[in-house]
Picture (tube, helix red, strand yellow):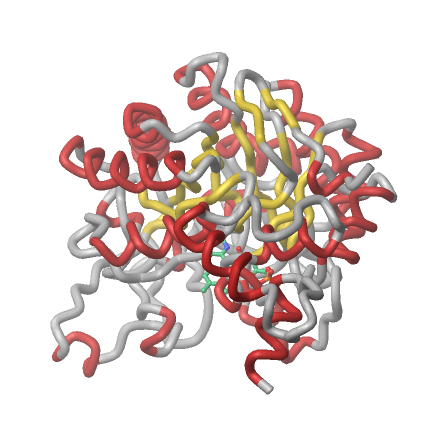
Length: 390
Ligand SMILES: Cc1cc2nc3c(=O)[nH]c(=O)nc-3n(C[C@H](O)[C@H](O)[C@H](O)COP(=O)(O)O)c2cc1C
């Protein structure tokens, strides 16, 4: 049995396979509203056969955006554009998920493809808006970044309620799965990590105190969601820095999430400080975050998602066969090849002759593609692509 193509049911939602398009910010929304770019972008992953397609990190408030190009769900007018994306994703047989976020001290920065750092005077000349970020404490993310204003208790209640309202709007838009972003140094993770949270009230200090606000948000969101809607949480399982958030903390935190009704922990790492950002210069290899998904799965007893440099169907399959995770999240390989899931199904011999491809493509590919070698021998999709390019 090929596990990658085993169905998985979470609450009322049945995924066709274990392949997930990982959330990827496109920084291309206009004033918090999605555009036709997003429709095409997300639609093609569904057409490519992924079981679950994630819409990028989406902000709970205008000031919670990381960049001027982030989509939001802070007002009802934003629901309709999201509904269209959901419709396109589902019409191709995938399920639709969305990641809900507040950027915290990493808010008000450049769109990734324009520098991926703090906003400069030149960005402002180009029309980018800047604003003062908020965070657990008055410590900036890195050199050049603005100093955040520490959130008051009323401010925390307001943000908790904004998470709830955004998640409700996501359900109205038709999303099957909701994920809370508690990774990569954004607001909720920065409460967790002792390297970003220096508060002296009940939201800072001990592990229990640092977990308090993220857990309050989780509880409020879970209570507001229909019981048939799965809730995921993405965490940074380690800060990758001595004295920071560690895998042991993640296990404790995941147990708490499970007790609150979270269905899956999506295990990323880093991003809380420049030195611990997930970036290729740090020399990480294939599947480098899988050990975190494995440990949390076994020690917290909760389903996990593995992500990070999982590139080939064989490697993804091995992670599942070895019981290290329940879902495989793929980001960059999907940008490179949105048909990754269909190619994987062919690779494992589960489908032949393009039968799972959109019929508008399949008819042509099966009839003419199969004749490429001239001897009637069928090539799988990727071989065909390679041979045709030679
Ligand atoms: C263009 C791009 C945008 C990303 N945006 C997000 C995001 O919105 N939320 C998130 O949690 N991770 C984001 N990530 C991280 C990915 O979801 C994923 O965890 C990471 O790229 C590692 O997986 P990969 O090796 O398959 O690319 C982004 C990655 C890329 C390449």
